[in-house]
Image 1: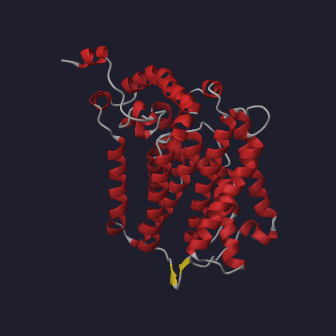
Image 2: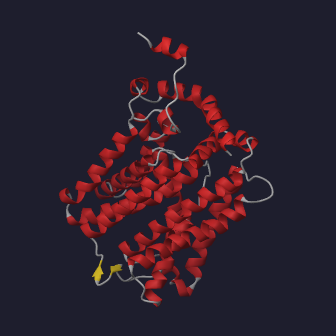
Image 3: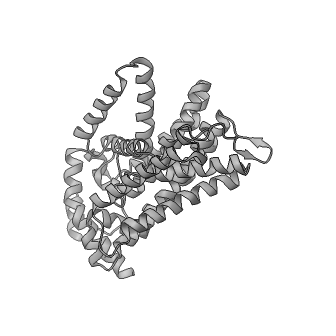
Length: 368
C-alpha cells in the first residue's frame, strides 16, 4: 500500500508538472507560484470573513436569500467532490439533494419529527443510500464505466425521480409537500433569519474542512491521480471503480445534508428538486467558480445566484439570456473557472506529504 502511494506521488508530478507550468503561465498568476506563497488559504479566509459579517450588513430579506445561497454552496461542494476530484460527470446530483428533502419532509409531515439531531442525519443517510445504489449500478460493473455512460445514467436517474415525484400522490404530485414544520432543537424553532443563517454557515464550514482534509489525505492523493490518469492509477493496483464509488457516495451524503436544510428553510419540497434542471444548475456553479478547488464551488454558487437575483430584479424579461452569455464567456475564456484568476494550477492540484528536499542542481538554479 505504501509503495503504491509512493508510486502515485512520483507519477502525479511527472504527469502534470509540465501542464501545470504551462497553465500558470497562460491562465494563472506566475509570481505567487514562483515565490511559493499560498493563495488558497487567503481566498478561503476572505470568503469566511465576508460570510460571517454578511447578516450584519444585509437587510432581513437578503439574509434569507443568503441562507439559501449557502445551502446551494454546500450542494455545489458535493458535485465538486465527484467531478472536480474524481472526474465523474454526475448529471443526477439533484437526485440525492431532492430525495433527502422529500425524506425529511415526510418525517415532519407524517411522524412530526423535526429535531435537528434526527432530521439532518436522516437526510444525510438518505442521500448516501441513493448514491450508493446508483453508484453501485453505474460504477461497479465488471468493466470500467465510461464518462458518457455515467453521465447519461445519472441524468436518467434524475429524470426518472422527477417523473416519479410528479406522479405519486403520496409525495404531493405536481404540488410537492407544502407547509413543512420548522426544524427544532428542543423547544427552539429555527426560523428564517440570522439563526438559520449561522446554523447553515457553521455546517458549511464543518463540511468544507472535512472535505479539505479528505482531498489532502492519502485517499485524496489517489483521487488526484485518478483524475489525471486513471489507467496509470489502475496499473499501480488500485481498484479505480471502487475509489469512484466511495467518493460518489460521499458526494451523495453531502448533497443529502444540503437537501434537508433546503427543505426546512424553504418550507416545502417539489419535484424540481430531484430533476434535471437543478442537476444542471449545480454543474454551472462549479464550472463558473472552478472545479477541483472546493472554494471555487462555493464562490461559483454565490456569484451565479447573486447575479441571477440582481438580473431578475432589474432585467426581468431578458435576464436568463444575459446570465447565459456571462456563463458562456467565463467557460470559453477561463475554462478553469473564476478561481483561476488568483489560483495557479499547481496549487489547485495540491501538494501532499512533507516538503521535498531540493537537489544540488535545484539549489544552484535557485541561487541568485
